[in-house]
Image 1 (cartoon, rainbow, N blue to C red):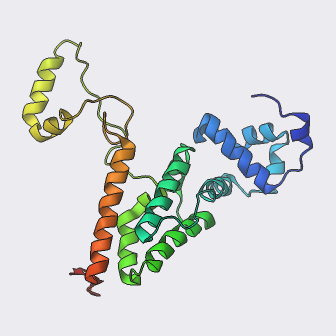
Image 2: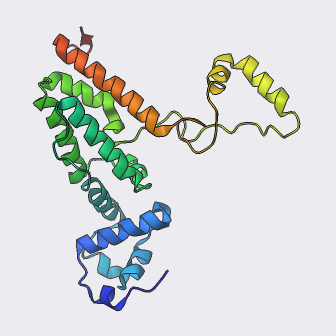
Image 3: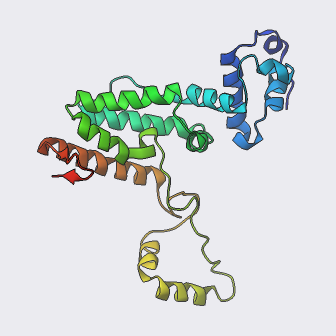
Length: 238
């Protein structure tokens, strides 16, 4: 790693500089490679100097999340609540995709950080400003889950490996799988498959995300118009 410049070494060390440098390191090398020692080296200080600004690695990760999530645009967008919510969620998705490690760290947190709470508050506020009741908004936020921050936890972290068509016996393996799992095979063959998607080889992550988001928002709107209320006894009432 390149030595910090003289100007960087002379810059006063503060919490914001520590966090933003850590974000840049994670963006460049992944969260797994980030350590307090490496961060101190990048900043041109001894590791103990960092602990004046972050108590430990967990506090560092929380602060890094706040830097990233705090940059999500929460300005009013669109003509109605659906447009506003959609814009904020897709804005969150764009922001988190620019920092590939952030969703992984978010999933590891036991409680939301201040910036995450502020983002959630802005989305809840958009639903409430649109006239959705507290009752419906409560269930809406459960339905959105991690999607409110622009990512989803898929059934599998990565798609299953497909047999190599050039490998001996691959044709028989594919035929056997199609016999055992005909509906899976039907869907798998419905699109041209290539690699790199978390929702299945050949799937367009962005399209699938927006498809599900729009279905949810349309459903929320329908329930709102119907005056939907929960039963108060643990189950929904239509």
